[in-house]
Structures are given as structure tokens and as C-alpha cells.
Image (cartoon, rainbow, N blue to C red; front, side, top):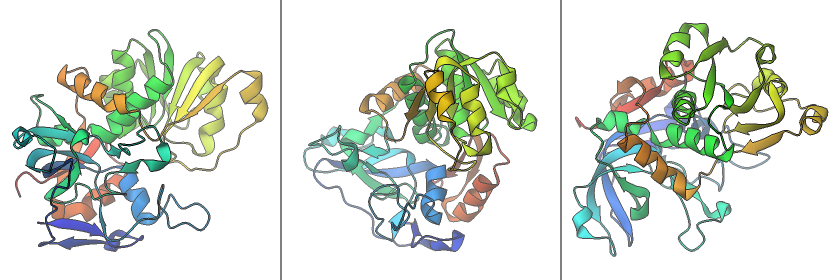
Length: 338
């Protein structure tokens, strides 16, 4: 099969295309999926460059990486083969993949969780093998490219909103509102009856309002000038971070799942405790989140947001466009044409 291998941490040349890489075989409880589309995510870039490094580790978000690996967590495809214990009737089923692989013995143990495209091979290839429990059948009348846009970004957005317990009528400030997670967070918050306000570049404001934002503000603006927010949904961090907490009402909730603007921020503890704020970190989604996401897609509650598509061999171009951030929504690899 064709596969794009990450051979080490580094620049784009760390990714090496192979035209005849071994096709995976399903183990017990696994399925092999023919990949029709796979989206690009921040995790792909961060893993490649070693951004998750802390101390002396090798740049993985969890366990040390074993190179080469095949990246790509957001997969839509068709089950091509099943392993022992998986009904043969699943062959031919169209599926989307929950990228969080949990230990079947201890699914609630976060230290045992792995990520597709990191701890196990992902969708930058014609085929991948995953536990059958992670392959969700889907019948929505959307293209593979559209369906591949949801898993990580919409799943993360949904997880953040659920962790923050967003309620109808609440004001929700959403950073990075033109990106993958942000654009879906805006849609979901609006669908849940909340009042989303998107933070984005002014050139992208009209599209963010189309997603459902009642208002947008420039990412360089001061959100404290607005009516206080109940919740801040953040994937940016960076130098503007402290203003997000100041923009919250007393008892407000802040939830974070990224730091594309910079991971080191300054916190005045008085802002936190004197205002009874709640800070929430969100990485590994609850097992129920992906099932809910699939249901929302099937019900047409959220719409796919696709900015551009590339062929598998064009991963360099796809990741380069992703890093430049001059787009709205998701960038997706289209493998269906082979």
C-alpha cells in the first residue's frame, strides 16, 4: 500500500512517501479499514516537530514514539477485513474512527490511552488497523472528505463543551473560531442553545458568523470590553490568555485543548480564586463523546467545514498550508481516487 511515514522529529523532510509499504492485517478484535479520506490536525504538526516534548522526553504527548509511524487521526473509510471476534458482516461497512484507543481492561485509565497516528498507525496510508470498537458505522449522506473533517476537531469541541457543562442561554467565548476545533465549537454551542462569540481574524469573521457566532471580535481585541462570559473555550493560549479569564463572570469556566498561540502563559492567582473560576484541561475524550458526535452528524446538527483537499502524495503541501493558517475549517487528504 501507499503510506507517508514519519521517520523522525523534524521539518517536512521527516515525512517519507513509500509506494509499497506492507498492508496491515487485523489482529483479534480489530478491523482493517480502506482509507478514503484523512484530515490534517495540529497534533500531526506538533508530533512531527516534537512540540509535545517536556524535559528529556522525545516529543510525544504520552509514551515515547517508535519511528517510523504513520500519522493521521481523522479517518473515514470502509472496513476491508476483520480479525477474530469481529462479525464478518462488518466488511464493507462505511465508518469513521474514534481516534482515542483505550485499554479494554481499564478504559478509564488515561495513562493507558493511545492516539491513532501516534501510538498506533493512522490514516496517511491506504489502509490502517484499529480496534473494531473504534470504528463507528455511519450512514450520513456526506462525502468521505466531509466525514473525515469531524473526528478530532468536532470531537474535541464537543468534549470541551460537555466538560464545561455549557447550558442554553450562556455566553461562550471561543478562540481560534475559524480553525477546525473553533468552527465546530461555534456550531455546537449554537446548536445547544448557547450564545457563541468567536475570536478570529477580521478577514474570516463573516464565515465564523455563518457557522453560528452571534458576534466576532478581532483576536487582538480585549474581550473584557464585552459583557462577561459564562465559558471560555480556548485552543490558542499565548499572550492574550490572561484576558480570557478576566472576561469571565464570577464562577465562570475556562476549558483548554490547545496552545497554538504559545504554551507559556501568565496567571494572576487572584483572578482565579477571587472570582471562583474553574479551569479545565481537555485532551482524552470520554468514550461517550464520539458516539454522541456520530449521532449529531447523522442528525445533520453540525455541518462539515472543509477548506481544501490534497492527495496523499501532497502531504508536504497540505501541512505547509495548515501551518500558514490562511484558511477556514479543515484540510483533508483525499485518498478515494487512489
